[in-house]
Amino acid sequence: MSSSAAFEVVVAFALSEIHNWNLSKEEIALLSQRAENHFVGVNCGIMDQFIISTAREGYCISLDTESLEYDFHKMDLEGCEFYLIDSKIKHSLKDSAYNERRKEVESAFQKIKRYKSSVKTLYQVELEDLDNVSFGLSEIEKKRAKHVIGERLRTSKAIENLKNGNVQELGEILFECHSSLSKDYEVSCKETDFIVHELKMEEVLGARMIGGGFGGCVLVLDKVGRKNILFEKIKTRYFDKFQNELKLYSFKVSDGVREI
Image 1 (cartoon, helix red, strand yellow):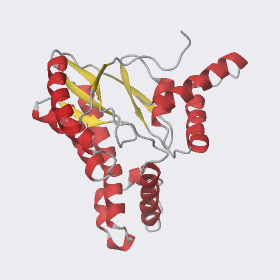
Image 2 (cartoon, helix red, strand yellow):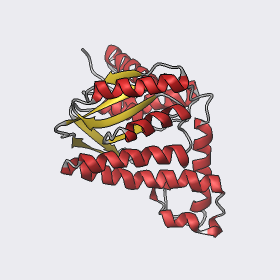
Image 3 (spheres, rainbow, N blue to C red):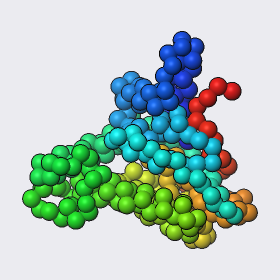
Image 4 (cartoon, helix red, strand yellow):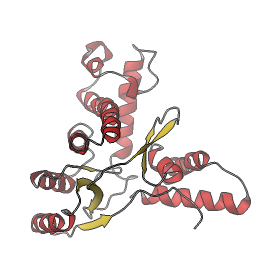
């Protein structure tokens, strides 16, 4: 959903158009990220702003956040669809543990870099490196690093399965990602964990939390035609457990920021 990133991007784009600054979409994304980091106070990455700036209808993006090199990949999911379920749990990333997670990741990286000077980001570290006792990683740092490294591997697998049209495997990757976000990075919450668990019990293809965590939406991948009936089932169970109403969002992948 990324409402703050969307707002930042559209304001930067509008100002660029009005004042003829001729900012590229990539420059707009970077400017928007700086606003989030230095004005809002959330030490977020570039992903949300970059996608909102540069998106292409019907495609997903693989982005190297270090170099900002990126590729488009056609989303050919014949007979399947993505949709969102909103947990209605509001979060403030500025006040949540989001910045704390970033500090833990950076701490793990700096410890590893002292012994592996060739690595530029934690993303380049291998899983087996986390067992090297000379790095001096705490258990928390190991868990955070495991999630980051695992995301690199899951991203590569997801791209291959998108290319091959293998939605079954793609769905499993979504479940794996959520499990890591919940157990290793610890940015989920009991409500979003419950939604994903119930969806898995109903045999959807895949599901995972999205965004900065601690609430928000769950992304669901499933076969076309099951969405509404399935949502009503989950909605009832969720209300019984949390006395809160879920919300369903249908969406399509569209072009990035533009003048209408």
